[in-house]
Length: 344
Ligand code: 5AD
Image: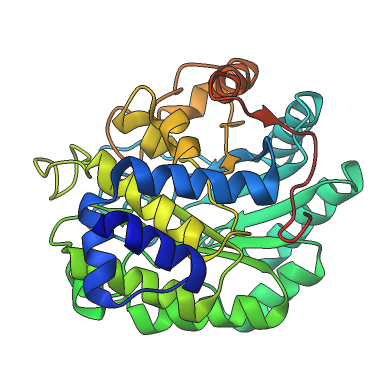
């Protein structure tokens, strides 16, 4: 009874009290997922948006405690894709009906504004009907602005946790939540469609921290939110930590869908790694975006943010067709569209 009441309240008021959020987060379950799915279908129908992920560099100057491509991981063989290789990934993606390309990489100084502007301009020249999303970490306002002017449409920068103390435990001292928040605000002010996001089950995370994430998201009002379970990586200090809990991830997705019905909400690779049916379950709990990997097969194993990441030995076509099938299994259809925020 109480869960039903809270689901109804969240659906109507799009916000709850901290204690109410904690109850839904801990024991939301099917009623919560069903309501989120219903709301998602009211807005998007059967459509699922698709983004092609191009992991173009695994060099990173940052040393985040959880991340497999952290600068301190000396076991990792580093790579950068050339401009031509990136363009080839996009061409491949275009053939596969993908109309958004996500350029994701570590924070790599090699990719200064000039190089990135060239990459963005060339992709836009080749594919004027496609959107470009950047996911390349923290940069200055001026840099964000230049990349936007060059044609980048969207930017993903997960805040990772909205609790400042928790942020400090997950990151080295040169990173702060305040700086992350400033970047997100800058990106919004410039005019990007902006995505933040967090890991569920990262070491030291409590239910209160996740509620902090919800409240921060309410305040920032982003266009997208990327959520996935924390997954341990063998060459980090968190190697023997437990992965995030499936139900907590699904409840978080569903809560966000009810908080903001038009939100772009991916069912992430990490969720697909945590559980065989993870991506389907994400969609059944209110997610409406999938992000297959377009990176060349020979570099995929070098972009291991966490252990056992799926699809690392498949090519782009196979990854996409697998995901398309998963979506069909749950009565959804991947659409040939950019899938901008507010399209519907
Ligand atoms: N487990 C799950 N997600 C991770 N990320 C980085 N390392 C891990 C991990 N060990 C996520 C972060 C980052 C995104 C690109 O990948 O949230 O923002």
